[in-house]
Image (cartoon, rainbow, N blue to C red; front, side):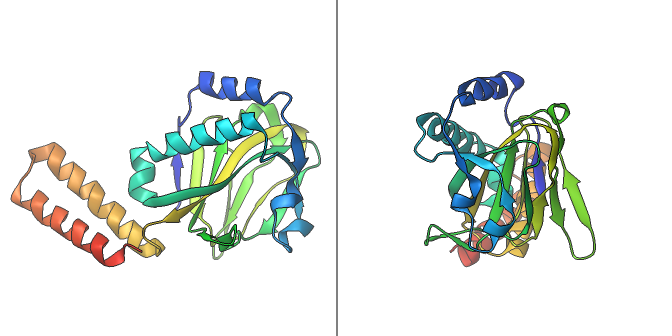
Length: 220
């Protein structure tokens, strides 16, 4: 299940992040890539020890966890391994799949990208996610995010002009299977709609019962 979170951050919040990112310590992005991804990864990242980067990543985590759509669709148990990436002219991240296990202990069930650069500020740099027989390119407004299955092959196209800043990270979900997360999301959507229309009706109670009991079966 792939979904977008538009207006996750306001323009003023994004500008504040940009201001604070000036002068941060940058390292070769290959330092956090798996052995095969190193061969196609070409970007820079804010050093994990940089206090400004740590603060921004904490803010992104807090805002995502407070988002009701993110909660309902991702069922996050943990957000982990966040990185702040910078792509300049000529930089790209070739076709790859994210590691299933990160830091030796955290599953990657879902991946996310929070776009920090306005689409008009750079050319190229699209996030391209492959499907079974097609692919889709995403270049979202600054402050928006996309969440997608970590099982997919994806890439970041080369930058031909400007700079692209983004925060990327991964979700270990309470519900491991994507199909189960989608069923729970659909049920919660119906549950909220029923409550908005008629309050706590018998139908609402039955949907709530099914939602809770499926969660009991599927929680890891």
